[in-house]
Image (cartoon, rainbow, N blue to C red; front, side, top):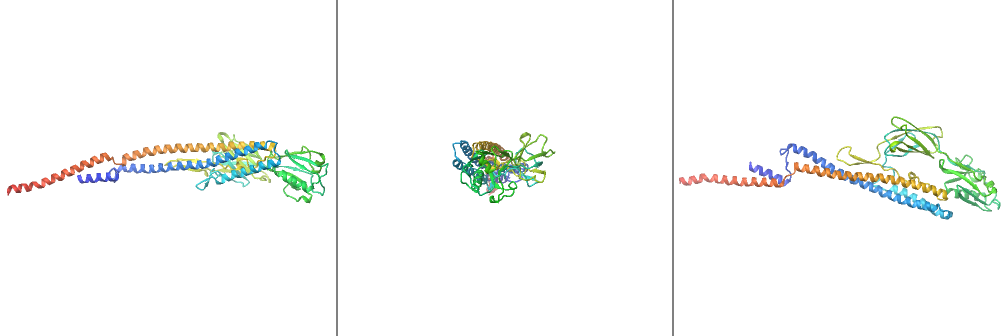
Length: 458
């Protein structure tokens, strides 16, 4: 019996465990096994939280660079508002601005973690539209899953100005020499220029402010050769009521040559749309606004949805579209040892188009002022996204601290059940060892007594 106790003590001392077999403590073994699984889960969740922090820091690095780029773009826009710059100066400013726009898109495409792109919209919730001509480009986190019905009743249009200018073999005379302005942008025509020279000058200069010049008889649907004699039209590249073509002419002879009128102005139009209130879609408090081909819907509690309509979507009549919002698409970080303990990281697309800075023009004071406003709006949007990422990181760091405390507490409880109390077990082992030696000594003496009696008899 003593040897059996010594053997058990040696097992506990050598392994460090108080329970070396189910027979030692059946209930304790069952409890400790569950605790062991929980501890390992908490340890893995802690690592997951740190991985999530690394993802956010990677995304934050890209957004910080975009913020820096927007700062430089705003500096250029402020510089361009100063009319001491001539057209060549503005060419250089515009060229740098365009390069910075490309750099924003480059940052978006290259910012990744573990081969997953972070800023291109892959980590935001998915949507599906019943019509390919309409697409949800942004949904806030407050937009619940569901089916959202939108009807587009009229397409957005471009600003379109039709002149009476057409091909001829004439040249600009001294009386016709002068300048015109289109949206404040100055174009000069000199004596001796052919009509082809005039046409090409209009194309070159107006392309800088986002206006296409072409010969067409059907409003630009079909582009004709200038030499065909078709009338020349001016057409904005962008859509919406904020698109305009405003003409100014210095003399009547030049106005007659180009077939334009001083003070003429035309505007584009925004698309027209409405939403349908349903049980699982828009509520009665939701409101809709349009700008060009873009539809914005807002509602209470931070609900925001942005939808883009392709040009010509409603050419054949009103288009009814259902946009389905899913919960899938966000990055799920498992932040606990149990099912459902998770954090969803939602990072929207921040390319130049989504930020509204892809088509900025700096060739006039007015265009540059508009660019400043657009860049300021983009800065606010990026700041809001960075703020949300900061909130994610704070949550993950708090979760990590809490997991560490839980793991330490459960590990201590597990240790009390499973681990050997080395001092107590060593005392027990020493006691059993002393008893063993005493027992052997007594058995030896007991064996010697018969021999002593035999010696007396002899």
